[in-house]
Image 1 (cartoon, protein in one colour):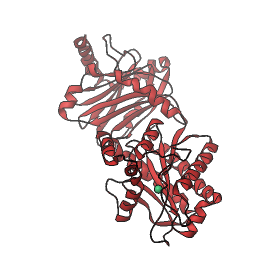
Image 2 (tube, protein in one colour; image 1 turned 180 degrees about the vertical axis):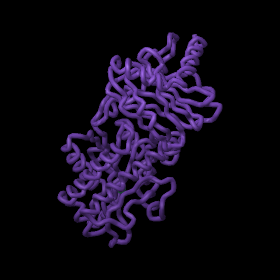
Image 3 (cartoon, rainbow, N blue to C red; image 1 turned 90 degrees about the vertical axis):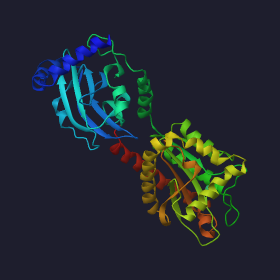
Image 4 (tube, rainbow, N blue to C red; image 1 turned 135 degrees about the vertical axis):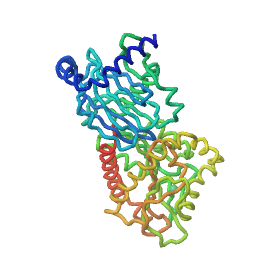
Amino acid sequence: MIKGALRLLKTAEKWFLPSVVVAFVLLCMCSQSQAAGRVSGLRIGQGISSVRIVFDADSEFDYNVFLLDSPKRLVVDTKNVYVGKALEKTKDSNNLISRVRVGDIHDSKTRVVFDLLKPVVVKKVFMLPPQSTFKWRLAIDVTVASEREFRQKAGIDNAYGNKSLSTGENWQPSSENGSSSKAAAKTNAKKIIVIDAGHGGHDPGAIGYSGVHEKNITLAMAKELKRQLDRKGKYKVYLTRSTDVFIPLRKRVDIARKYKADLFMSVHADSALNRSATGLSVYTLSETASDKEAAALAERENKADVISGLNLYEQSKEVSDVLISLAQRETRNRSSEFAKCLVDEMRKSVKLINDTHRFAGFAVLKAPDIPSVLLEMGYLSNKYEERKLRQESYRRKLASSAVKAIDRYFEDMKHKSLF
Ligand SMILES: [Zn+2]
């Protein structure tokens, strides 16, 4: 069965290559009238640890994606959709694809060939339904691989397809595209934000100048943030806690992951021996804390788990598996993007500490796939800052700046993201 398909494919390839122009003319003459929709664009960009190729289209269409060797190519066969030659102008800045070629096979099938500069493997192929300004999208994630891996995966018997788009033979659709519906559901939904009120229960957090507990200030702030975000109508907001309970740090990360959060924000208020210390700061994760102060703070904030008898370090080792190395670089970039937005907006209304955006090893920031920041709203050890943080009006002002930052972050991401 496979051999027959290969033979047919070779024949198709043979006449397809020299007759691209003829194919185009034919395509214009017949395919357009038959096709249900058209592919309006092709984008190639950097995804999470992979290169993502996206076809934009008016309608859903059938596809089959596979690799071919000698020379190395990624082939995308499409059916019942018009694919124009304009796609050949698409440039790849990832140094992975040297050229894009478009040609007709027969019936209403079109073949798009990506000439590869490096061996790759296909990680995921999925179709996304229209969302906001985007139409239908076919996304193909590829990663650079070894020559051996490439050879193992090359051939149509390893094709990823949504329908049996064969030339008379059985092209087994990949079982892996089951993830498409999940991905589709996720992009269609409102952005999910998880707000984490630091500390709680037997862990009071920092004790303020007049004896106020950090855990109460953080809960009040988390609730205020949720209220303001809910009012926007475009977010789904969850709190890790809405009462005075203790939640281990790892559990907080698990909650964010369970909700499939697009953004995780942990709110805190600091304290210092130096009672004159004031100002707001924003932290994102670093593998090694950027300075002594940040490291000390990370230790203070992480202590909660040691108190409850949980071995934090063992727990976080579990997270720092291969997932981290794959996804965390991208997640860190996004966390930093958000931190930047947050600092910018906060600057407009409150006093910041120097080098406002800092890096520390907070356990709570270690979700490998969720952009996460930790906001230290100010110093409870300072008489005046504590007074402000206890005021609802002040927290409302802080929350309003955070909401502006969140709006901006998702707006920015929309333009940067390939989705
Ligand atoms: Zn804290």
